[in-house]
Image 1: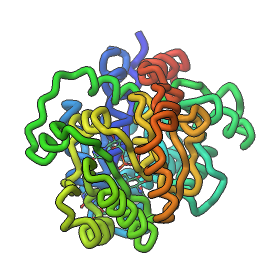
Image 2: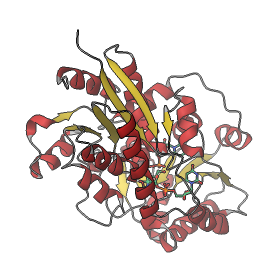
Image 3: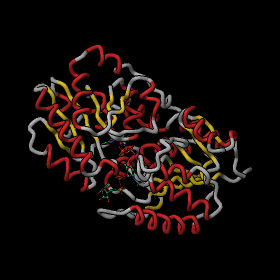
Image 4: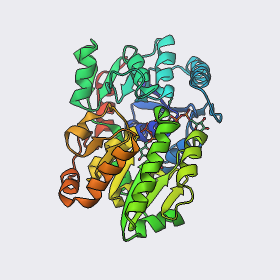
Length: 374
Ligand code: UD1
Ligand code: UDP
């Protein structure tokens, strides 16, 4: 009888936890895998919220987060901690997802220990080094290290092939984020947060806004907030639900411009389940988030992407998302069109799901099993 396959799953931020939770669960359903969940703690509250929801407790937690942390600090602290953990408790494979600094560092630490690395959500690209920053380079630096490339879509697979990643090391699995969102959407749910209750009970229209990207800090984010304020003033049945990222740089700007508007509901980051229900209730979603771009189309919600480029072109190609950048007038014009032109709205509000079918994590598990590492 073979030894179990020892897998270290590394997560650090909110989206890492959301996208790796289904993988941890799928691996744990299979007796041949021994799973060690490692949290870098790049995020604290926002990571813990998700782990709690999925009933996951890290086997090790590096707890690295500090207020105003720099990319270098995250990299150094996570690398040192992961290096120690992999030395003390060797594993057969390390897995992490997407484009966060935790993920890039997990790949690097695995490489230094000559442990195969599996990249979940591999192959997303804008081919613009600084957009998104530093995520585009986190992904690109992770790719040559990885032994397993779990691409969510055909487009992602083609990107990897173009970079000379061998075809036999790429598997199109769908995105595990869709596994997570469908699971959460099917759980019974009752809103207990008063702000969210107000949003969900509102009889007029609801815009859901999230923004946190580094390249939007400062002036672009102020433009976004001003656009939201203009829309609230233009449509008096409208309310804005804005769960604010915990980054102080993000909050400062949003609170200054929208904090006193009676129809702007500025909240703490919502737990994942309430956030999913807010997406389903929303009439329109404005976001610079990667994950939200994948999730919103599944619920048939028109989505305006507050960025000039995206590594998730499938939603745009399907007509569910539109890239609008961060110019105030452009955002106001595009949102106004959707709020006043039922045909334009209906054209975008067709539920499509180009990112996955909800079974990506099982595929990843089965691939790892078939490829049996030893
Ligand atoms: C990180 C990821 C980004 C991802 C985002 C998801 C990197 C470099 N960036 O960006 O790709 O889109 O997470 O949200 O990996 N903070 C808290 N509590 C928390 C989380 C954050 O207080 O639970 C505050 C801290 O002051 C921290 C700051 O937010 O210093 C920024 O966090 P950081 O992980 O550096 O950047 P994000 O913008 O969150
Ligand atoms: N999300 C959440 N609560 C919020 C805002 C977002 O649970 O208040 C979820 C969202 O559904 C998505 C993920 O967080 O799955 C996206 O994370 P984020 O936007 O922070 O990072 P990105 O995807 O841009 O890396």
